[in-house]
Image (cartoon, rainbow, N blue to C red):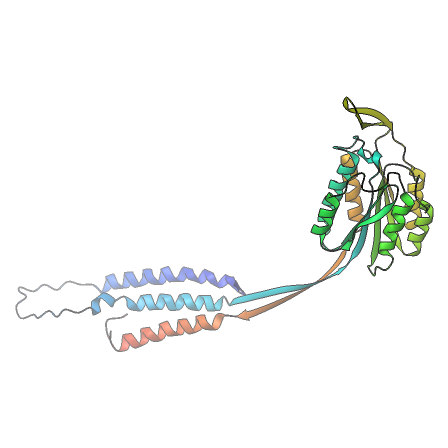
Length: 327
């Protein structure tokens, strides 16, 4: 409930003033009568004197109800219609053996998964899908608005699910194929890799040309520190770490982004990768048109009726049962 004219509540100050005036008047009307004896007087027991102050009580209640009515209480009902111009996003992630390098924590693959999952959680209005690639590619999750399913499937991704290698062109082509029939206002691919194309039957630039024809924008991300990265190797003596050179085909990744109207990013650690996703999130914001509706119902009439009822009750009692007793 809300009030259209809450300023009328200041009138409540008049109630204690009215009660104070009543008490002062009652004291002025009191007097003393001295008689030598009570003989000849007959005292009748009555409960009416107990209600001699009913008038001021009823008047105070009536004034309170009238003040509330003047403040115009209203019930407010509001709702809104939202229209989202959806964005369809495919995350194409490299899961080749080199993604186990530990220049990211705990490694490139796990860091990329967790940061991407946080990105997914922040975009509840978009359809998002997942393509993974190594020596070949396949769709791990098609476009969906059910992000809990997508996140579970993403969490299950691991190295060794498919033949090793780095088929960037195949991964990009598979992602484009998932978006080619989309009717979304914006179609986006986020492609993450830590190497250069060395497998697959589709060259990366050819896949980028196909993406451009279907109006798909590609953001490419190169994963890897500068120089060498620690890479775990299983040996008879346990896991040993070797220094692995970081070789990212930045020229090809930049060209893919340029051809499709996207942007190339280089991530050298967890923090820079997180910042890249935040930048992409800002670049690809969904537009939401919100129409708000408000409906208000006036509720002053019941309060006015209550005030009238109290005043009527006082008038009736004053002129019948308590005639001469109420003031």
